[in-house]
Length: 218
Length: 218
Image (cartoon, rainbow over all chains, first blue to last red):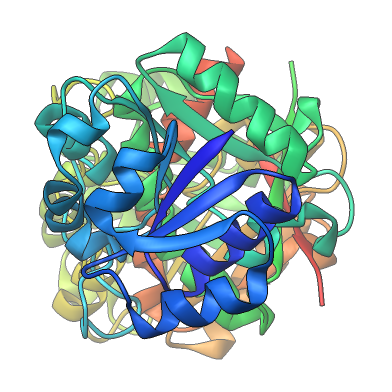
C-alpha cells in the first residue's frame, strides 16, 4: 500500500521505517521537500522510502499518517491540502502537547474537544482514525517491547477506515484481542487526555516502554 | 481509627461502609446533620457509624475522606472548615466532573491544574493525598471484583500521610505491588484527566467494574 507519514521526528521515523519494512511504499512529508531529517531517513530506510513536502506525501499516500507534533498538526494538514486528504484514511497518532508547558505538559486542546475531532471537523472528507497515541513510538511498532498482553485503542467515524487501521496494527504486532475500538471520533478526548497520566507514569517507571492491560470484571 | 467520610453518594457510602466493616469509627458528613441518606446509612452500617454536618465529621475524623461530587468539593471542604482539616490526612477520591456536560463529561478543572492541587492550595495545613479516583467505588473497596493484578495510584506532598493511605488501601484488599505512588500532588492532574478515558472504556466494556494493569518493559 502507499503511505504518507507526515512528520520527521521520532514518531514519524518509527512508523515510516516499520511500514517500509512491511513492504509498503512510504513518502515521509515535511514542511518542505528536501528536509534534512527526511533525506537522512530515506538514505537508510531502503527500498520504498521517499520524501517530499506535506502535500507531496499526502498526494502520494492512500493512507496518511499524521505523526507531526500535535500543536502544529492542523497547520501541517493544511499544508498537505484538503484535496490531497479527501477520501483518504487519515491516521492521527499525535498528542496535542503545548510546547514548553512544564511537567506534566498541558494540552493545546482537551476537555470537551480533541485534536482528532478538530482534524475531522476541518477535513470533513478525510476518514480520520485516532490510534496509537497512548504508547511510545517504539512500542507502537513493536508491542513485544512490553511484556504480556496490553492494549491499544482506536476510534473514528468510518468503520471501514478503522478496519484498515486494525490491519495495520496487526501487522505492527498487536494481537487482535489487544485492539480496542472505542467508538466514534469523540473518543479521541479520552485517548488524548490520558497523555498526562502517561507522562506521569513514565517519570515514575523510569521508562517510556510501558503500557497497560485492561482487566474487566462482571 | 476515626474517619470522616464527606459525601452521602455511592462513593461515600461504599467507603464509609467498608471502613466500618474494618472496625473503624466513621462519621459520614453532609451539608447538614440529619441528611436523609446519611441517617439511612447509619441505620444499616452497624456499630461505629455516625453522621453529622461536614464540620461535625471533619472535627471527628483523624483521617478525612473527600467523597463529594468533585464540582462541589471545595465548597464542601469550606463548610468542613480549615480548622477541622488542619494537620489531618485528607484523602481526595473525587473527580471534578462538570454536571450535565454530556458524554464524555467535561472536567471543571484540568490541564495545568487539578482538584487535588486546588484542595491542597486552599487547605495548606491539610495533608492531601489523591487516591482511588481512577476506579469505580465498588472496586475501590473490593479490588477482587476485577480479575488479576491491577493498579491503584496515589500522590501527595506528605510521605507519612501517603503511608497511612497505603495502609488503608492494603486493608481494602489492594496488594502492595499494585499500589503506585506517582509523586507529589501535581500528579493528580494525570489521575484526574484519566477520567475521560475511563468513562469511554466503561461505555465500550459495558461495566464499571474494570481497571488496568501497568506492564513495564525495559
